[in-house]
Length: 430
Ligand code: IMP
Image 1 (cartoon, rainbow, N blue to C red):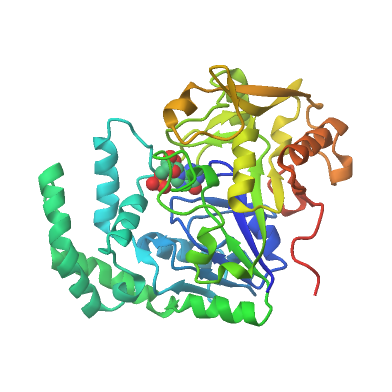
Image 2: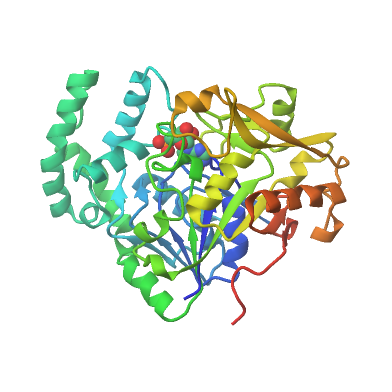
């Protein structure tokens, strides 16, 4: 059962879309398992750029089956816009199936996301897409799943149960008038009609594929440090962004997973608030932002930039059970005289080798850096193979391998498919 999980090893935006797109060549099924349209996966094919938020990156190949699993939260309007925009560009979306168990982001979730964020004394910097409130309702058993959303009778019944509570909350906490049942239903109906035929039992599909020995790729969104359990809580997203999310968010058994590939940048970025020990609030940070075009795909916000955090990376390797790393954006570090990697957090007279759970402690930590020699301007960018990389850049890759104890199986130095050098095959030949 060849099943590979792609996860973000940092705070999201590591280039998972691009790596998934590349691995999708050898996969027959591509499955999204968590998150929603807070994600933004950019894939460059030739001179075309695709920005995907909900649909698995595998959609760009006409012959792959793409599944949106039960663990994903779906904004129907956004999904339909994404489908239309792909179709307009000549990409067939016929092979996309959406889980009937996936939860739906309703209008009141988007509203609550914004109101709750505005009300927080310490902001999280959410994407404002209704992700958190939708997952809250899922866990509180007040959610609306696709199976109910596409059936007018069932949707009315569910909304009759949950809408009065939402309206009371909106009124009492935010003096907001809330939503009228019939109006809300009327707005949902055309969306439901258009999505109806794409909704089904994705768990059955993925399990059948696994039983038939098909190659299945699970595409994670966000990153380990944004995982609701393992990230820098409460500055996290509301889903299981680490590899554990793949089985729960798809219905594929945990025993089916053969490999977990962590996608990491050659440096670190973070969007939104929350601790970031290696953040550079100086010219080096600005330089990385400009060179790496570090502006959010979903919200356009400038990303905070810093050196590679080896402590957080080692933790991500452990939590996800990673077998290999895909290193992206190595070219962004071209031309720095020295490059730094954080190997420990100094807290008082202690050196911590694991990220502390306490944010108070984490905020008090100072990064301890290893300094490595840089490499010439433009040298990674122009490389056409791993062998052509300058020796210092290869030294950087080897340093990461030594630090984490796992191989760097892919290295990328540019946005195109041809700019990623595969050092060892991920899916075995059949
Ligand atoms: P939410 O997921 O919109 O609730 O946002 C929670 C936190 O996760 C915020 O700091 C967001 O900036 C961050 N976040 C959510 N999705 C992504 C992503 O795809 N990449 C990077 N950060 C993200």
